[in-house]
Amino acid sequence: MPTKTLRVPTPDGRADAFAAFPDGGGRHPGVLMYTDAFGLRPELEDKARELAGHGYYVLVPHLYYRHGPAPLVELPAHIGEDVRPAVIARFLPWIAEHTGERILRDADAYLGFLAGRPEVGAGPAGVIGYCWGAALALRTAAAHPGRVAAVAGFHPGFLVTDAPDSPHRLLRDLTAEVHLSLAENDMTPEALDELTRALDAAGVARTVEICPGTLHGYTMSDTDAFHPAALRRHWEGLLALLDRNLGVD
Figure 1 (cartoon, rainbow, N blue to C red):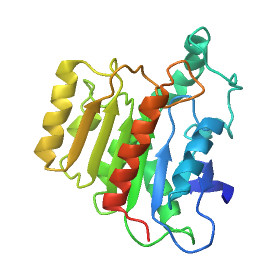
Figure 2: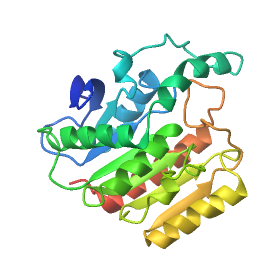
Figure 3: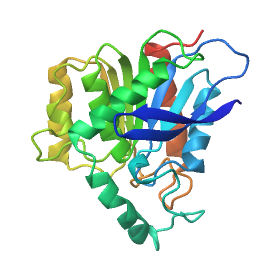
Figure 4: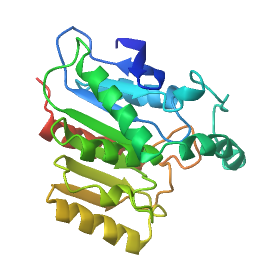
């Protein structure tokens, strides 16, 4: 499985990124993968490799690049609940810096870079996000209706907030098919209802589900929230979404 470490030019500097793509040459549908709060690390690189094995070129940018290359924090091999609060506290200030304007500046750069890779085909892209990366993914898809055909979010955060530019308020121009899979504790029933009504008003095909018996972070094998059966369900839903909308030759 070919992989590369790349530098993505952005208006604010260069973002280091991990890319994985299929063996054998040729051009493949492009997928932008946004990380969870803990950022670019072996867990996300493994997910990129897995997805690339199904025929996709996967780009995983380091979202906190303005503060230096990854890793900014030396993470434990396993992020247990005993250390999670202290670890997540290191990332929260960097997450808070991501205004809507900054997110879209980066998204423009990531999508443009992805489209320009010689291994990526000319068709639309898919965008995936985990945890707070799901909010980035939905913002990216809504801002690029002609370039993003599929968007997925797993154990998402910050999709429905009180902010005027909450992601659920930005879906008017969305055209991508949406797949969202929540952990049981991710969203209140009221927020979930508000989100589904916003998606339905946009008129897009969508799947919004709650994955039973799961905690926030259930796809991440380096955390205590990991749920193997739910991870398999994640791959089934994600691959079906991408195949419907991007296809693989």
